Length: 328
Image (cartoon, rainbow, N blue to C red; front, side):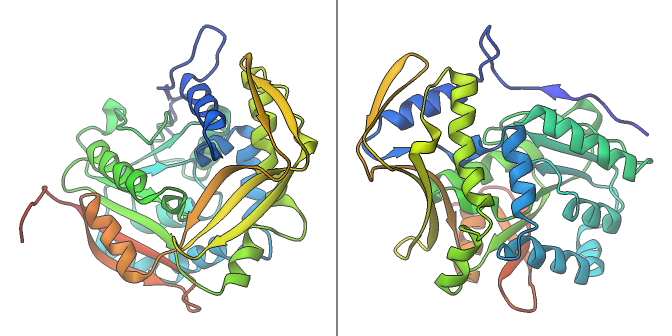
């Protein structure tokens, strides 16, 4: 078994603070509509809470995507072919990633994630399941181009981006990410990506505001992380979780809403909020067949195949990185 402890490509100050995290939080809290990018949910506690969310009865995406991987594994494997290095953007799920790796006979596995401890733990667990597979975890912000380990530089590559994480981003950011993925993986690479589909509003709202309150804990944990890592004194109990459907942009929005007028500091900078004001923490865009494929094309990827679960709640797409074109 080849299992590297992993590369660290995250910029931190002398105190260990992630510089990009601090910059995003301070800028977001200073904005007229306060907002923090969803990728900062995923410290170790947030990553574990999200794993818990995927097991909830209301949260259909994981079950639907897993059903596609199980039911269409042979077809997916034939299109991908053996011998590719699988580069997963985000730490591997205990269910979906092994299903893919079992189906396609990969030459190596390279998980990229910003939550270092969670990344290394999940990578070690996966390496134990696949003792003959070289595993090279990389702690990095995959929103930017990533230098992959030298051991996989010359191998053909398959990017894996499950869970409809692409839907967390507005169109401009999603397009930029797809382009950076293309740069990371190289021309001729393939990308297997999950995209959640537009559906009944009640189903969507329940998936992001579960009866057990796990999604609320996940959302509020962002404030706990800010307090812990950025020296904040945000009164976490003074906020409540709220999920909203935005029909104009075909997305679920998650907000942290102030229960009362508030004043707090983060990294010694003062902030205030009025009762009812919110911090916008996540978008989860939902796609049609056309909008999903158009997004891939805008990011430099040519769709090759598309699958859905039996209930048509979720889609999994395979695309190929092609040379840029400016005309038909």
